[in-house]
Image (cartoon, rainbow, N blue to C red; front, side, top):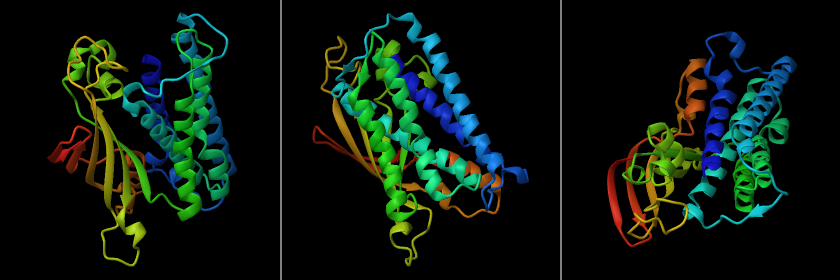
Length: 302
């Protein structure tokens, strides 16, 4: 459990790092290059490789070193957490790949090179962590995680090949729940931990940009329709926790959203900032459909 959430923490760190160049655009150095800038591209590759290496080494020393090693083995955890962790893996692979492509675009790399060397970043990094899991006696590599990593990357690449743009974005939102207070060791003791650990409060969204599908229309370019997935009633990865008295259930949402990258601005700083923050689902009215038959309206859901 801790390893899975540590993965997400590392992914969020990478998201901020990979997009750092896009967010600090007051200097002309950070303005997108119209042609290939080899020194910038080398900087992107070296920075990503260095951060990935340091992170994996640190993860090994701070966590895996405390557990016995084993022969490489797989586990089947596909029924855990009502698959919320698997959707999280797909989201993470998608966002890492998207922002790596953005960094390469800033360096003037061709779309082909972005797809070949930038888009797979999330899959490669998260799969490396799965290999480390596989050699740990306490854990094990998850086939479901690897498939989810591949799905997130395929979702990114598929849109670029089919539409030459990301018309549907993978997004994330979070709200605090009472479940964390019942099992804080697993679900988190504070807001930061709960954002990573409490699957009850996480929602993952597919946010579709309306204008991108009807470019001759008068729809606002920034308007999105979003469909979300969540789950509640979970105090541990499987049913059976002593305080878990009500059945766990799935949640499906429909809502509005904003594509921050479609907001017009002449500020390179704001363009970079909007690109960085576009993994967050904007709070908005939503309707919720639950697997136990309830329909719930939310004036504002996040």
